[in-house]
Amino acid sequence: MGYDKKKGTTEAIITELSDAKSDQGARNAMIQRYMPFIVKCVSDFTGRYVSIGDSDELSVGLMAFNEAIDRYDIQKGLFLPYAKLVITSRLKTQMAKQNTDASPMEIQDLDHLQSDDILNKFQQENVLEDEIAVWKDELLKFRITFKDLLEKTPKHKDSRERTIKIAKQVSAHKPIVSVMFDKYRLPIQRIHVELKASVKVLEKNRMFITSVIIIFVKELGAIKRWIMRDGHK
Image 1 (spheres, rainbow, N blue to C red):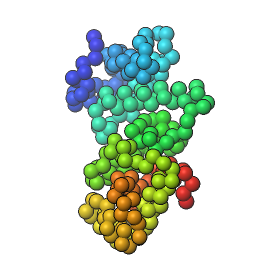
Image 2: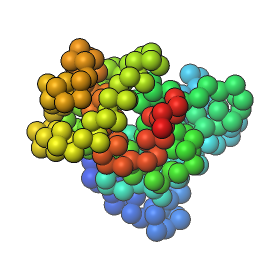
Image 3: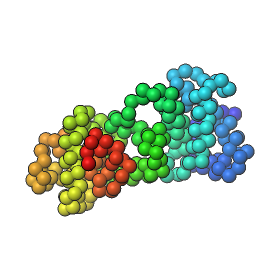
Image 4: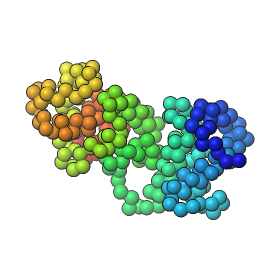
C-alpha cells in the first residue's frame, strides 16, 4: 500500500511516529509504507528515477528517513516536509564528501539554513539547530522570513561588511535596542541621529541589519561565527 499524502499532513501521523519510535516492527512498517515518498525525494534530488536495491542515493535516503523518525518532534512542523528536508540534507552531505571542490557556504544559503548539511559544517548540530529556531522566531516578530532575508541580503562583500558593522554598533546601544525590540522595527531615524549611519544604507538593508542585530542581542554564537566569517571581530 502506498503512502497516504493526506494523512501525512495531519496529526494522525503522530501516532504512527510514536509507535515507530518505540517498536522496530512498527518502524519497519512505516518505512515500507513511505517508500514511494522516499524514492520520490531521492529522485527529485538526483534528477533521475532511482530503484530499490541498486542506488546508493536511495540507501542514504532510507537512512535519513529512519533518522527523521528518531529526531522528529511536533515543534519541527509537519513530518513529511521535515523528512524530505533531512533526506535532501543527507544527500547533499554525501555529495559534498564526494566533491572535494565543494564551495564554502555563502549568505545565499539562507534558504537552506535548516538543513543538516549546514549544521554539520559547524559540527555543532544541536546548538545551531536551536539557534536557527530562535532566530527564525525573532525574525517573524519583525515580519521577516528567511525568504525575505535571502532576497534582501547584500550581494557584495563590502556592502555586507558595512551593514554588519552598523548592526554591531546598534546591538551595543541598549536604548536603541530596547526601542527596536519593543516596537519590533528598526528605528532608522534614531540610528541615523545617534550613530551617524546613512539613512539610505539603513533603509536599503533594513532586513539584513535587523537580522544581524538579533544575532548579536540574542547571543546566537554559532550563527554569529558564520555571519562574521568575512573577517569581522
